[in-house]
Length: 542
Image (tube, rainbow, N blue to C red; front, side):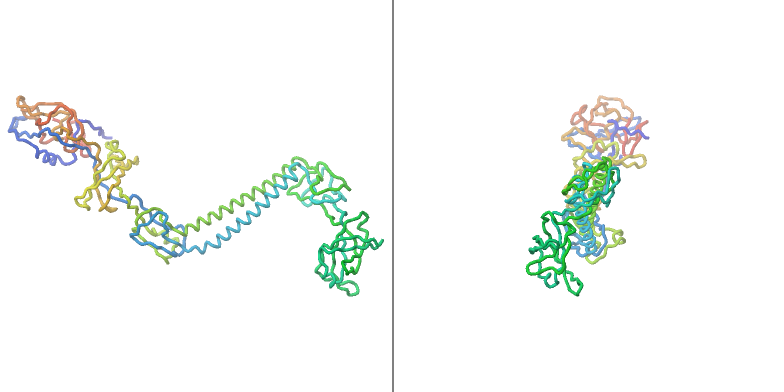
């Protein structure tokens, strides 16, 4: 790779040397002829003067808006409104397009129904889990009814599964009597009516209450049409299922007698989600079991398995609820896509679709529905050489000109120095983003030239760039010098100077010269031996 290390002895010449010579000629003084390198030449000089000097980096670029956006659709359908036009100023969030959303209504309704079902299932699962904690967490199966245990069907060591018959339970403290009344009379009897049951065997009367009246007509022997009336009566202590009785309700009497039965007469079955092993029976036949009374104990492993089953059902219900909520949210998001809003504030520069147009997968892929430019500011990119990029910082001033704007000058500011470099023919450059402060009269797409102000000095001692030679040497007019030195004719004294700011045409001298000194100008030079010219870099070596 070429060595392009800059030295203070290198003078950067941006234009052709002929232009530099012409620029220097304006300030030259003719001091006659003197002998130099065996030839008669006219020495060209320039005065050391005080003036402002600055150093700039120059590059061209193309203007573009600060931000731009191509409006597109994520859904298909007919555009129902598009209330904007090219040239309109739009604000971020402003509605640009509305698309027919009717095809999403059924999907939303279905999603809402799914959420409602999932909510009910979750509520049931939570209740089941809570009940299971109370019933099974301690490894005990409890009765779900109240009554006397008439018969037990299980024993220790057996496996009980869902639906297994555990015991017969009955409660004869309240007895039920079901007797027929003539249909017309039964229709006049209402639930809650007072009743009187008369025992067929003894004639003893027992008070009771009507709890139900059948609406179904039935025919008895002899063609009598009846309806059955159910009466419940407290057992005074002697009623059994073997006894029968007739009944009266007000002025109406039953057509036949009926037989008593316990109000509670049920089979206690296992309502378990999984099988368990009976470890110990906790009741005996004849015992009274209230609702919640422990019936048998099962082993710990079975208890853990049961609770795990309920937890899994609860977790599954929660997952279903989450899934339903996600579905309705995704449906809402999809419905939101049917309203297209401006993603940025700016100016509409293109409108490709209007109300009534249909958006399909093909049309949405053909291009933007509309294009918006944010013209609040305009930017362009400058390509800066790797040797100079370290001098560029955010906030530096940029002088901008545009051929399309005539002689108008604009100010800009460096916004960002990118690290994403580009290498072309061994030359690496970095893009520098510049924002135009007041872009009035400029439009996106215009070509501009920018000059970044790196540094400047006011009222500095300045010499032409063509007078500074290798080693920071300058030749100052001195008639006492009688001999020429190389290409420098007699009458010039060698002076080593310290330099400051340099640009294409001038060099700031910080020490070694005084205002008014006359310095020798090189009338023509090539790259010094051993050095290389890179781009527009040249070295003067005499």
